[in-house]
Length: 352
Ligand code: NAP
Ligand code: F7E
Image: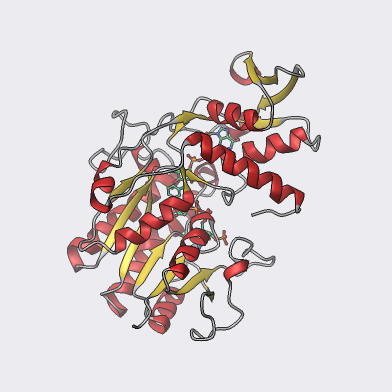
C-alpha cells in the first residue's frame, strides 16, 4: 500500500512535534516546515529528524523543508514538490501577549498564512486535506460561560483576531472551493514541550528553580484567569482523526474543566513540596511557602495584558460524538507529568 504523505507547518513547536511522532507511527511520510534560524530550533524533533532528503531511506523520520508562512512562493514550491495528502497548519506566532507587541507580524503569519496555504492547495492540488489550528482565544470574554462551535467569537487581541480570520478563511475555502478544510478550535493544551513563556511551563520551571535556589522568586501576571487545560499529546491524535472523517467540519477540543493560574501554581507547588498560601492584594499580592514562610511568587505588572480573557471553558461534545474520543489526562495528572519531566530536563541541562 502506498504511504500517505503529510506536511506539518509548525513542526518544531509543541504540537507539531507530537503530531510528527504520531503520524510516523501511523506509517506516514512526514515533511515538516522548519524556519531558518542562526541557532538550532529543532530540539523537540531532533530524535526524529532525518539526515536524508530521500523518502525511502528516511523511513520513520521527518524530512525538513525550510520555509516560512510569510512566503507564498515558498509554500507553493513545497506543496508542488512533495504533493502531500494532508497539511496540518500549526504554524503561528502563538503568544497572545507578544501579539500586542508585534500585531502586524502576527496578522501576517496567523491570518494571511492560512490564506497562502489554502490558495496554494486550491491551485496546485485541491484534494489535499487541510487542518487549521484555531483557538479558544477567538471566544474572548464571552457572554457564554461554556463555549462550543456555536458560540459567537469576540476576539480581543491581535492574535485572536488573526486566528478568527484564519478560521473564516478555512471555512470559505471549504464552502466556496470544496476543499476538505477543517478547523480544530483548541482550548489551551500543555505538556513538557510547552514554550517557556507560556504560563504553565513558566510556573513549573520557575518553581523548580526556586526550589533549587537558582532564583529567589517567580514573577507572574494575572493569577485569576481560568483556562481549560488539556494535554497536548492527546490533542494531536484528534487532529489526525478529524482529517479521516468523511466530511470536513469544525470542532472544539477541550476537557470541559477549568482552573485558574493560581490553582496551577498551588498544584505544581504541591508536587514540589511547597504549600503556597496567598497574602496581599493586586500587584502587592505574594505567594508564600507556608513551610518556610518564604515568599516564592511575586506579581510583575509587565505580565498583565492590555486585555486578558478571564475565563475559558470548552464544550467538546460534538467532537466526542463524531470521533468517539474523550480526554484521558486530568489537570492533576497533567501538572505531575510536567513537573516530573521538567526535573529530568533540568538535571540533563536540556530545554525543550
Ligand atoms: P508553538 O509551540 O508556539 O509552535 C508554533 C510553531 O509555528 C513553531 O514550529 C514555530 O516555529 C512555527 N512558526 C512560527 N512562526 C512561523 C512562520 N512565520 N512560518 C512558519 N512557521 C512558523 O505552538 P503550539 O502550542 O504547538 O500550537 C500549535 C498551533 O495551535 C499554533 O497555531 C497555535 O496558535 C495553535 N493553538 C495552540 C493552543 C495551545 O494551547 N497550545 C491552543 C489553541 C491554538 P519556531 O519553532 O521556529 O518558532
Ligand atoms: O496565558 C496568565 C495570562 O500565555 C494563560 C496559547 O497557546 O492558549 C494560549 O494562550 C493565562 C493568561 O496562554 C502569566 O494572562 C499570568 O490569562 O499560558 P498563556 P494563553 O494566553 O491562554 C490559547 C488557547 C492559544 O491559542 C495561544 O496560542 O495566564 N498569566 N501570569 C500569564 N501568562 C504568561 N504567559 N506569563 C505569565 O507570567
